[in-house]
Length: 115
Image (cartoon, rainbow, N blue to C red; front, side, top):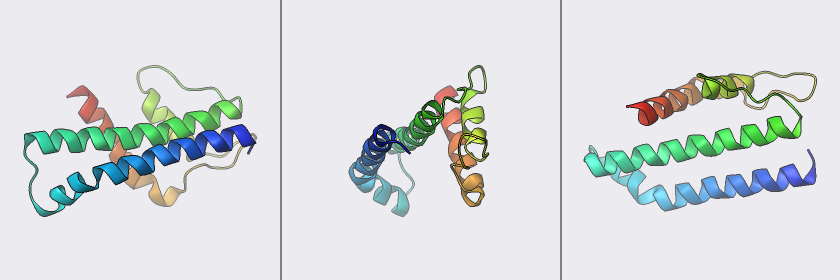
């Protein structure tokens, strides 16, 4: 991995860590009670931001390897699926053990954005 890509990924993961740090009070509330409308909306925005951060890292990796970035109607699903495949340019990015959990985030992201 080249130095610039590494720095970009570190920057993005720091933003994700900051998201979790800032969102901790909200996450704690959601653990102990059913969130009201405002809390649920904030939690939805939190989860979408988390997923967008992960997707941003994936796009950085694809671009650094001169891979085609999917587009079209199901772009987010294609970006996601591509991370679980290896190719001549790179190893598999995400481990299959987390695929089901990340599928739930992807599904939620779609629901949150389009409902």
